[in-house]
Image (cartoon, rainbow, N blue to C red):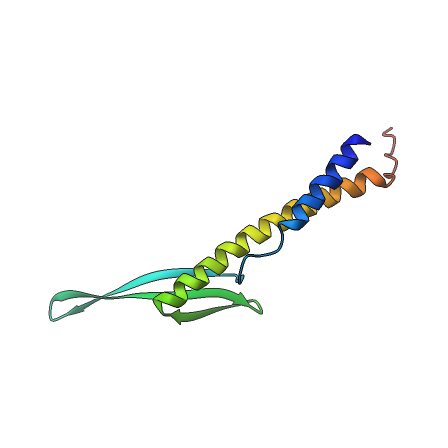
Length: 110
């Protein structure tokens, strides 16, 4: 019973941490430079910033300014933290439910 109370306390503490501190987005931001050969000389262009993510099972890419890249990168970082917190809550929920409900009896192997 003490373990169940500890699980419930831990769950309630974790719920308070789920609220994000700002915007959240999925995907990734990459920085690219383009290199082109012109008249025998390689010239570098950029940097260019791209945001890629999945929308309806398709990869969507969008070009960004440096300011947009910074903001979106922060939002993606917050989303990763949020996903980890939710995974922790799912695990605790499973433990609590298994503690408060009877389990199915195991079969005897012959």
